[in-house]
Length: 294
Picture 1 (cartoon, rainbow, N blue to C red):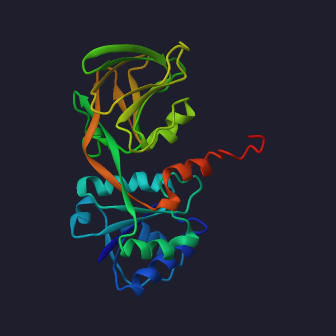
Picture 2 (cartoon, rainbow, N blue to C red):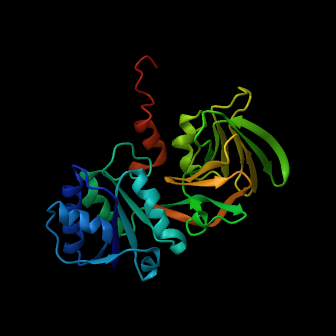
């Protein structure tokens, strides 16, 4: 068995988590391969590691890996998805951050849950992604043109709102006059979209949600659409450019650019355990049921 270990940042509990993961995998004689940037950070922070193989691109992960362990928060899993891409490599999210809707494995459960992975005592949650195509082409949106959480268009270098002319399957929907517009997957529904008044959506739902950011018209509400829809966005504003973000990656796009948003033809596989499932996670993270008056 061969497992990739991915991370972005070194935090207070990263040291102990990495030690537990490495000790477990070595005990089981599992081959370990670290993300090169993360490996260098661990060495810089005096984490005692043997010499392990490293990877530095998505192409390396197509070489007979069985799983990818992500050590960090949800943002780390979003970044890991850009390496996994269409390889169908399952991601095990170990939470070293704060709010973990995707990275649900806690430090105290690492050995127990990794043992269950080895005996196939888990389920796979297939997560839909959303893709973006620009017309004319934009070089910044060519290589990694997909997002696990959301694609967002927003104003740039101005306090003035922008107008987002929106079409669904070539049928006119609305011209949103707002600070921006979010097209979120079910996975991303607990992120930026939720902060802007969007609904929480079950991960297995076959839909996207269109959520305006601070719209001028209060009747412009979030809209759930089937995930086989194709969205076309045409943006107008006082500035010559606007911002486009795919999860945490952001770039500037000219007003003449038309954006096409649709579902990707591949999924991201997230390893899940019944005791760390979505319903339990949202109850815990959103503090549902904590009001003792209910």
